Image (cartoon, rainbow, N blue to C red; front, side, top):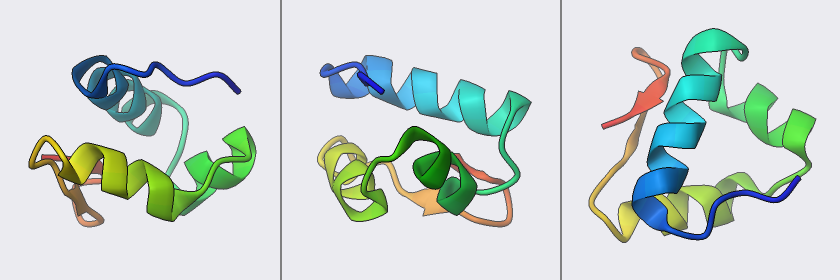
Length: 58
């Protein structure tokens, strides 16, 4: 899957998918065949971190 390159757009895209389709970040990453570590690193660059209890990046 081609994810957005811009980190702010990526944040919105991922959080929308997590809210509407996936019960966890792990499920999202497996389904999209992407590295969870790379995704979290990209979003931590804009100071956003995954909170499992909320199932979103804040």
